[in-house]
Image 1 (cartoon, helix red, strand yellow):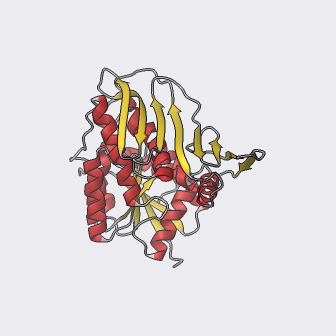
Image 2 (image 1 turned 90 degrees about the vertical axis):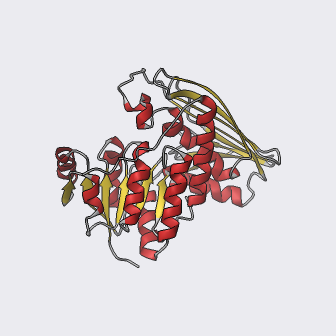
Image 3 (image 1 turned 30 degrees about the vertical axis):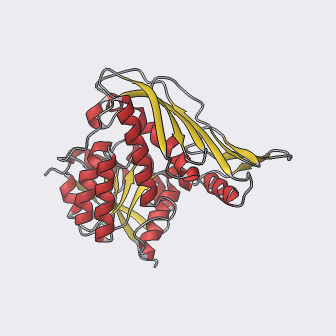
Length: 333
C-alpha cells in the first residue's frame, strides 16, 4: 500500500514545468524520467529537475520498465495516441486536460483502459483544490438546497498569432479545449451530463474557436451558462445557485482558495482553504494513492465524467464549425 510510485513526464512544456515541482510534496511519488521528441529538450528538463533519465522519443518512455505512471502534457491532439500506446504498455496515466481533442478519441482511450484494467485519470486539478472539495461537501449536505443553476466564465485576451499553439487548430488550439474545459467540467461536476448543448461564438482565421458561450440544458429545467474566450478577459468566477442559497467561487475559480456561502436568511460565510504547493499536489496525490490501493479509476474525476465533458466540448465545437482531430502519428521513434 505504501510502495513508491515512479512517474514519467511526456511533453516537457510549460505546464509540465509548473507541475513537476509539486511532486516533492506528495508522499510516495517520485518523478524519474521525461520524454520529448527532442532528446536535447528532454535532457535539459531532466537536468533542471533532477530526473534520472531523459528519453528522446515517446516510444522510449513507454518501454521504460522503471516507470509506473505517465503524466501526459503534450498538445491535446497527441493525447489519444500516446494514451492508447501507454495503456497497451501497462502504464497508468494522468492525462492533462482537455483529455483528448475529440469525444471519439476519449471514448477509445476509456474503452481501452477499462478493458485492460489500467488506471487513467484526467488532470482536472480544479476538483482537487481544497476549497472546491469543501464546496462539494456543502452542496452534498444541502447547504444551498437543490442546485438548479451554475454560472462560470474563464477568458483571457491573447493577441492573435497563427504560429502560436493556442491558435493552431491542428495542435488543438482554441478557447474550448484550453479554457472551456474548465467551465464545462465545473458545471458537470455539480449538475451531471446535460440533455442539450447550445453554443454561440466565433473563430480565428486558422479555424480555431476564439470565444464561446454555452447554455447547458437539463430535462428538469436546471441549467448552466458558461463563457470562455481567448479574445477578451473575464473575471474567472463561478456561482452555484440552489433553492436555499448560493455559493460564489472567487476568481479564479479553476484554482480558487476562497468561496462565499450565502444561505437564505443568513449572513454570508467566507471559507478560505489555500492549496498545497502550486495546486497540482492534490491531483498527483490522488493518482499516487489510487495506484497504491490498486484502483483503476478516481472517484473524484471518474472516466464517465471525463466522457461527459468531452461530449459537451465536442457538441459545442460542432456548432461553432470547429473541426478538431486526433493526431494518430503522435508516437514516433
